[in-house]
Length: 467
Ligand code: GAL
Image (cartoon, rainbow, N blue to C red; front, side):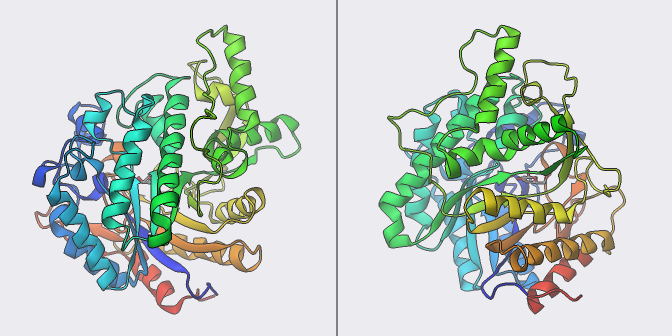
């Protein structure tokens, strides 16, 4: 039912699980700083301890083994390795920590997929302008080269940046993620641009200096909803859907996979809005310089984080007319028939994933696709026997199987988000995405497999779904 060498994985990210925020010479990151201010995160919680994977890694490994995963995706904390963000100061304890994680995985026959950046910029670099500053691209490239050099003998799957859309928009326009900037209409485009430049430089470094020897693959993980017009007969809704997809998926994939530049619909929508507002601060969406290595072609596979689907309709009044939502002029709504039982933004639409996979195949010339994140959360009363989430995994994997068999999409693997409950950004510990429950009230942070974890393990073992 699934290809023989299909990758069965689960994913995590450093700030969400590691804790040890000041342990072993780690420097602060923007999430450490962000959480210090009251009112930003649910219950003013933070990732100071989280799942304490910094000390309890072996417990995580036990979970990975019990599930029977073939792959484990995790991220490196940049400021644990390079406390001030630069390669001038390497924290050997950080190197040792990740070496142990990687060696243990390899020893258990589990392939690591390593994310270099999952939302946690070293604070020292934020103090120099962070992702808004053009010089960040070179700093990221040096960090990436350091990681390829140090870990690339064992790591064959790399993600440079996780969800540039979320970093750019939630961190620099909405201000609900670190660094908490609210500069609508401008900063997100600049940040997204520098992330693409940084990603491309790192890919070229790998391609030039490491690929031959290490033989790995490098990509960036993009998040996208599937989107459909609210009214399929309404031309304006259809156009709004195109804009919606251009501003989410297209923003980062057109430059890398299609043209080397942003989608035309996106550029023209932003320009039209600037004109309408009499904005005279220059083009808000930057251009790629011919003097820098090209962004086009800088992905060895397509890494997709999928969570939900949306119905799209033309326009939606937005308080701030200088913001991305106004630029794209597309409102999104949830279909009332889609169940929402976890976080408010997540409607469960398994066949949306199949449609998105087919769209990716057709739009990006049939790339190798890894689903690098997908999951469903529980909120409120805890259920270890989480049958709804078990059903979610079965339903979703059935759609993935159909995408592979019927639509012939080249899906190489699937990573559940997440291995275990963890610090869910501004929702703190109130939202649980784990295949394992983590008891945050018990000093031991015990991990207990959910029913959904058992279900996933069963599918992995059989390599197929029971009909
Ligand atoms: C993604 C993110 C993960 C996780 C997940 C669930 O956007 O990459 O870190 O939090 O969403 O909300």
